[in-house]
Image (cartoon, rainbow, N blue to C red; front, side, top):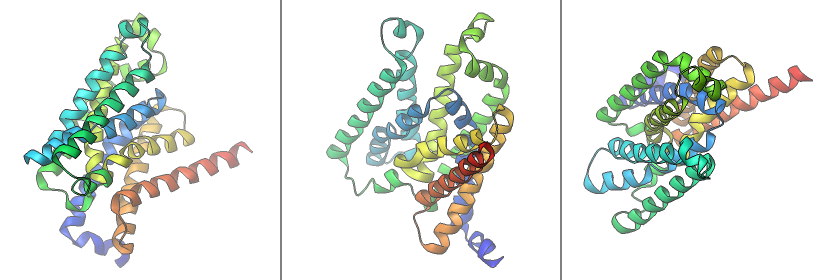
Length: 274
């Protein structure tokens, strides 16, 4: 019991737990829609395109989360415009639109880093620094998670139908393209939370791995949402405990625990089907 409880006697560990759970809830919920819509590449793109905003925010002394959010909203808008039905009719596929915005924004971040920063200064952004979450950032992360939960709760039926069959959703008056753009904005919020927890490099794992684990255990969306959030929360708690006792990087350890849970679910699925 002491092994489990002693870490939480420290204030920085309690703050890290709150921040990790906030990011885990947001990413766990949205990850289900990302997996259903086969948008894993979007999570990868969003996590990497935070770099320009992070570099500018650090250089100017702004909030890193505000910089990352601004960068991600630009990315979400760009992807939404380029992947719209009008653009698709003109020959621009979704994956191409994501790839163009992703590589362009990340290249901009690299150029800005060379001009006004250094890779050493930004290493904690690339790999995460959960144990030094500032109170202001924690408030923003909790607000982002609450915003995700409120929007998904209000539009769950529409989001679910558009995820299963966007064509039918359009026929009955549900504008799937607008929901797609809204989902991109929500993913931007979740990714901003995840950057503080596991860094730019590993944020997509926090968005995709818990949802992929849940998808191995159930095919119904509501149970999948609960399982995805539970998996993310377990990974956060387990990863923080292991990182504290073994002096490991917290972000990478959280992702490794999430990956281990996925492997266990995959093995269970294989055994059931054999």
